[in-house]
Length: 362
Ligand code: NAD
Image 1 (cartoon, helix red, strand yellow):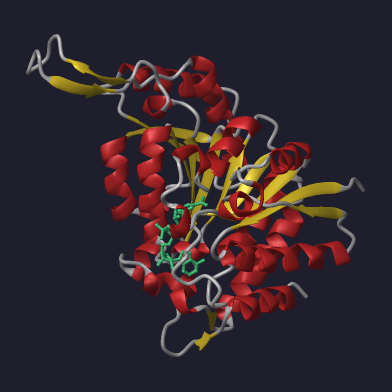
Image 2 (image 1 turned 180 degrees about the vertical axis):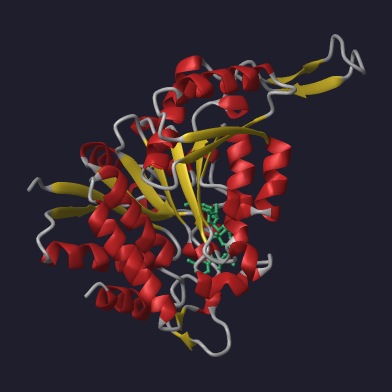
């Protein structure tokens, strides 16, 4: 059995607390024979405090060498006044860039036991399990030219204007479409491609290319939806989706909307993958400095991120399923960290929740 090298980057705020629980879960798998080598490194504000940079060379080298990266969270109010390139959040942007992580996978899962925490009716979200695949390195966020200038035309010639460029190349669309179709094959075999092809040239190319890629996946059903309709359908009938694939801008907005359907940000994992399925896995939430050090943070998003790491980067779907089932069991047993607590359930802290998941793994 090969040795799997995992770079573990806990970061700031609640990062170290929640990552410690995910590490317990990985160590439980090691006990059963999965050969996992975990190596730790500083990142974010913690790295700046020790080494003067949020993404030190040694951390980047470790992340590059590893088969996958388990990431906690970065950011703390005390670093808010640093120059932009030294701020903790730059670490995550640097890792995405240097590791070529172009595909962001964010599942929105609503466990039946937590359906009451959603702002939607429980019957609409209970059992929800959708996956948003967002392109992460292109689109209007990175397209050139961009900037400010004096308008030479438009509604107010001669006035100051800001402008950005939405662009996607055929290979960029092809590779994200492949990620979505391959993910759908492992799930409900349905992809909804979201665009604004009725208005945007970029979206027309997007739709054309996704349709062409779909021909290589005859077992997966493809449909197309305009982004405004997708935003509506997500709150009207979220369970009608399986995998949603979309560009950087639309994905940014829709993935946050989908996350909120589930009621708790503390439950949602995420993955950012390169072309070879190597990835960085992290909870969808931030470093929560308001509750750091209190032992009350929900570690489940990070534990579920470790499960995604096993599934997508290490090719260990059974180990991933084992973690998912254990999380489901502790929720069914009524254990809740404060963020998901409801009367009638049992309130537990971060470490107790992690220990309970390990016990539930058998
Ligand atoms: P946040 O996600 O850290 O917190 C938002 C709210 O959710 C807070 O009330 C927090 O207590 C709560 N929360 C978050 N995770 C939780 C968990 N696991 N258990 C229980 N409650 C949880 O977002 P924010 O407050 O806007 O940002 C705080 C810091 O995190 C900032 O410095 C920001 O830049 C950073 N951030 C980092 C990442 C990342 O590392 N990828 C992502 C988003 C924000």
